[in-house]
Length: 368
Ligand SMILES: [Zn+2]
Image (cartoon, rainbow, N blue to C red; front, side, top):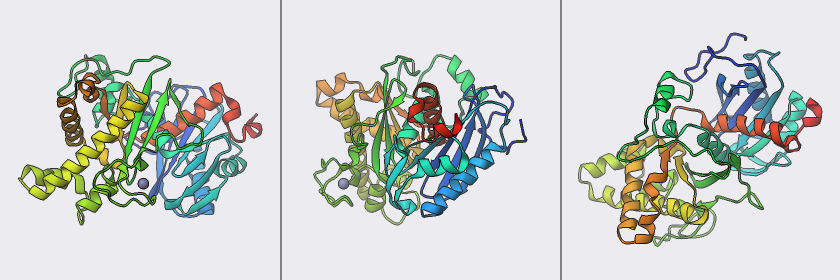
């Protein structure tokens, strides 16, 4: 293969032949791309800053695709592209609406990128691809930031009997076709992605998993969606920022202040911990997933976040035999903080469409 950009996550020593899957995660501040080989190893990673507007997003996405293609063997096999983007996504048509942070009101992203690159493209919502990427990781990798799926540490970890902190039993995902994994994205907002049998669930209108706008909270804080008391107002990065303002990384600071006996910090932490535990309960009681992964920016807080949510789940369980019987803390995982899981999920989404339902790809007539 061609010389590759040195990257801690790229496994360039063990390249396998087969189709190349490119995955691009178009975020509000950066566009991150990966290339995977036929064995689903990462062979290249690259990121560039985001610029706003339809044309800029198209141009930057194409630039990143071409950069990644320059780093893989052109004879290795057919190439697919998976794109993840915020906003409402019509995955079957590759169209995105209301990606507000990217300055996009309406854009036929899939058809445009397919036409420019000549490659088949699949477009998905950003939370859905992060869910797919996180669900694809070995159970223990999820709990252990600091490893990559193909690193020596991860391989060793996969071999040894698993034991998460304070938990019992094996952590690996059961590989059943009907296995359901929920991914709760604790980002600026709050939403969940649902993976069933290794595939993204879309629902009837693409609104599946929009749990952030379920009005549940007694504080009745106003929400940007127009309602009051939405779950997002007490269980998201923006909720912590609003309740604990003026700090660059408010959640770690909040938790540190609580440990020093700050009473106001304790009140805010209770609101946030209760809110996220509510999100976990809502997901658990509506779709009953075997695994619930906490991801998004807030998940980078790591074990203290997991401990906080577990504490609040245990409070519910303490007064309800029903809730206790669900063993919700045992289902919780933390998304790996050091892996580009959304870009990995995008690559998997494009590859899965090509392998099983080529009609799901935009521009497949160009490639065939
Ligand atoms: Zn709302």
